[in-house]
Image: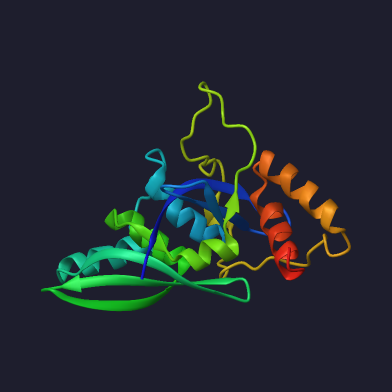
Length: 210
């Protein structure tokens, strides 16, 4: 089955969800972006692999897991976001040892955190992007604007965050909007790079068959 490679664009803060962030993945060879709502601890685990300034005095859980796999000569070849059901993404770790492949079920945030530590590629299937991907339809960034991951997590005190499960989007405030209003708001959200609002608007349009 055809796979589409994804790259991490960065994070935005999920204002309507306590301790939640929007992890934005982008199509490596395309214009679509895939926003995924994750908890703050999961965002922290990924951010530490992206920002060299962020350090820990002791190994984090994902670091321990990687060290364990390394010790037993298990390599993480890739991760695949393979299913989207009821707003929740499902992922798998594709591991290999001595030429034998094993597939391990994983939360998407954990899978991405592991992929970053192993420098393994992140993939999804076309139907996932068709369901949940968002297109950019406005002007490209100017040359003086950086396209590096937009991460601003080092100022947060992560020790104060409560451990949460995969975050879920709360009540959709756009339920009473017309189709025209939804499309207009989606354009505004994309231009402002408000991926949380864009994902909710996208889902509302999809539920109405538009």
